[in-house]
Image 1 (cartoon, rainbow, N blue to C red):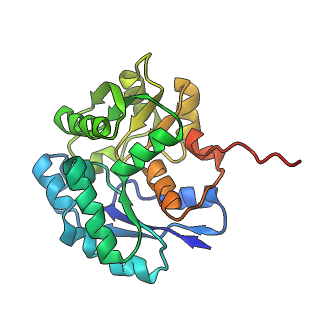
Image 2 (image 1 turned 60 degrees about the vertical axis):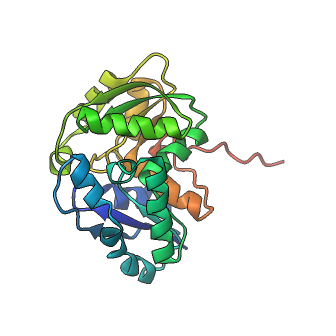
Length: 243
């Protein structure tokens, strides 16, 4: 049994996690603890407070008691808003507090882009343009070429959580670029776990979504590789050839 712990900000798209747990198989658990987000706003000052060490530390003990082998801060904007170095310091502090390997959704995106072999990406963000630009800058610091960025201008996670698959697909189409090897949807408030294969089929290229890469990052930290094609290209591994 592998248990992976997630610190999730507030209440919005967290039902993606039991859905993914179902798809991953019976020996993987995804316990999740909600953190206090303070003000629900995709605004730099509010995001810095949301990702503060004190707010993250408050949920760590519950995840430790759940048997988690690794912890991921399941928030993209509340990690990349600190910048490349600041985001590293954030997860180092989380790892020290938990006594466990730790990461965040922002680093999950960087690692997932490398995993699928994408060199250029398009960003389809629900955020305002200035916050979306900070994510693009984070990716560039990670060595990822960003060829297009689209910010939808949504201020709150609560509103993002109401989006259906048609709105998600429309945003992804608007952000897509002929040179992009993959499309990134960076908001963990967005429900995507049930739609990834449909999005990839419609767009004709890999799609990486926030909750999807967050779970994949937890598995990576625990040194687990899982084939779950319903979760898209990132979770589709070549079959082992029996000789």
